[in-house]
Length: 125
Image 1 (cartoon, rainbow, N blue to C red):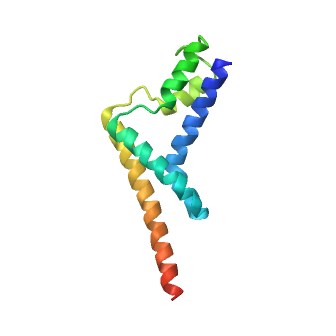
Image 2: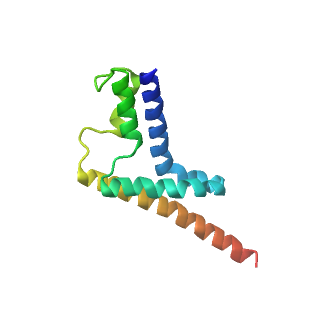
Image 3: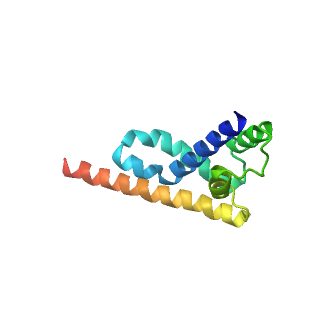
């Protein structure tokens, strides 16, 4: 049961990272998602800029250890998803770059949204 839960946490973690990066695009369609996405994007950027560890990482590691799986798992998630979230060559500079990508990408999407909305409001006057 523990390895399954660890895999579930890993998938949720990966989905969260994708949401942090691309969630602004969902806001283009559904404005209310901004209430979820902005805090997630801020959290993602803060984690990268400060070098903090996301709480999902220790939870996943604990679940893997409880399942006696350790770090030597060779299933799909360990082989393909783990390296996406935890690259072996992650340096401080790369973390800063990733944090910058989160900020720049999401700032661009929200700026475009704001501009589009402002143009629409000025046309309706």
